[in-house]
Length: 377
Image (cartoon, rainbow, N blue to C red; front, side, top):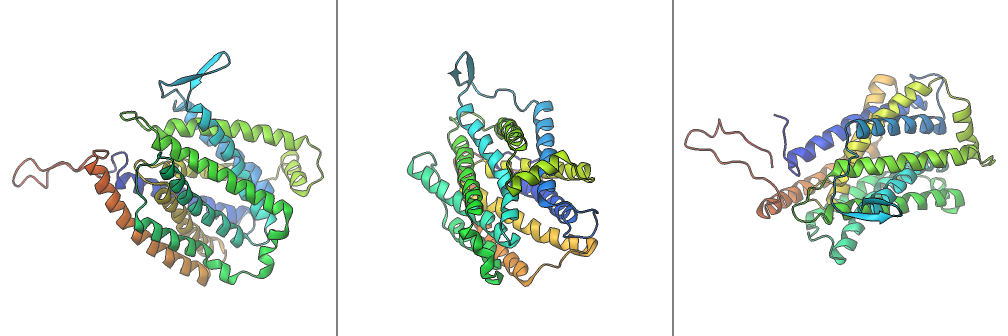
């Protein structure tokens, strides 16, 4: 019943369902731990939650990839690094991991440095959608991507950006004062640049698999996460012992040196976010789809999950009710999903014709249709 083929629409829906489920849980947990829903006391500041949730997320990713053996070499192409022979793919997967190590903390830092959380979310979600479309354009021009970005995908991009930016109409002019804040602009630039390289690299790996060579997203994920965890650990040590008087550095030092009483539950909540990372990466790298389509699926799923988390926290934990802008955003998302559904049907037909995707088997004879096993495509 739940078995699906690699690259099928059914497999994509499974990944979206997993992403949605864990994102909602983490979204509610974030509101609870940081005081936006009355349940956890005493509440944590954003930096404390960042530190312990990041630890939990990194640990769950490392535990899975190490014990499941995903890290074992899955290539026959090697290059020489001094006395060592390493897979050629390490030359760009490890940099992708370093970019991931930048994306994770800058996400929370943007929430801290920007007065409006709403504006921070708009910037992050819209930027990923735009980056994904630009990556496709770049790789098409470079001859790396052989597929066409469908008109329906481009239209969906427009509606998705509109959905992400709906809240802008309610924002105050002071919410955009980060444009004159050097620290906030530096963090924002680092976030966008790191995400740009990361999405490019993921799609480079996906689009350059030699014919007949399996696209092993689990291996990519494992190497990327190991590189990200090592990088974050080194950066954390450097910041902790830097002695800097900058506010974010002081907050980080205190969060580690003086652990909050809720540090373990926050770490557990972070493990849930670590589960989100699995589904997020696998959606970004989904077989046979453009970066535009995969980026849209990823961001739209998070937008819907965010609204759902707000509803859950309101009805169960006393958080705020979704605003009119939230509902308008959701309506635009549904329109974007409609165009993406059309694009997905076209892409599936294209992949089947190119024999990159299995087709459902035909019934063996008259009257046997109801008994024939059906594979999703």
